[in-house]
Length: 334
Image (cartoon, rainbow, N blue to C red; front, side, top):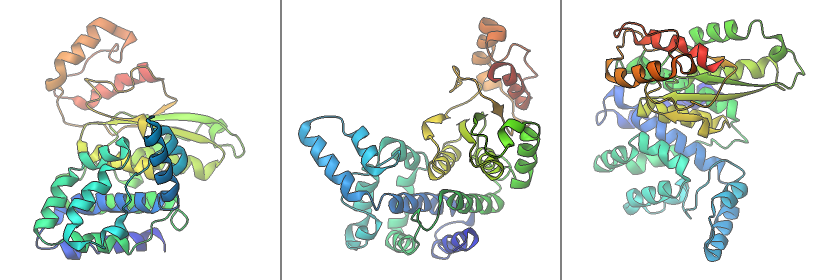
């Protein structure tokens, strides 16, 4: 099944939501459930090994986390006896059991669902009598990595994000940059870097997006480099202010096998999440037309105290032009 068919199947969940949810709210349910199903399928093969390791380390009274990631073969794990299929066996307690299942994920994964405010959606679905139906719908789709690899799953996820951006005036433009625009930017970024694009060259590069949004620029850059040189490795870094966009970006990086510790939350201008790092490349769709007055104090402090050792040595633009605040980053990160 190709990614268009997969995303169409997942989109059919909207038929169940219609009436209880506005069209612009569908993503609040479908995106986190898609992530949950992917993680559920990914951990299926190592489930018994993880549970065995967890029980063993509990008896030894040691921190089980490193042993559990090793047992899962992933950067995340789940210590619950439950999975989505088992949840369907107890329809009367599916709400409580779903919470128990999610709470047993490793901290980085729990953070994704917290930033989605998934608890509120579970409560809303349960109240509308839809929680079991939605859960059952997602168990029908097989998102195991053996059937849907990371690249394909990333495309599925991106297609869903695009659809939700198109139907929601609240998110379109602010959190989503059209793929065609990103491709052009990525082409311009790599066009003269022959060392990276030369097939067989096992180079390592880093790329940073200070306003990552849902992660489109990071993922397209990774795809582009892989297509031109499968031996090259691009490590992705980013930061995002909006909680839901951050959750989507973090999930996308997780799905694609990237280190999600490289993604930080918060306002890039006032709290630089990667202050001690330098990167080979930077891509960004800055906040055009957004003023930076609410973080003016922190920015001016860095400007005065650090000068060219900080990010704003070249100078500060008008308060009304937040997009120009991203330009001085080049003096700090390259």
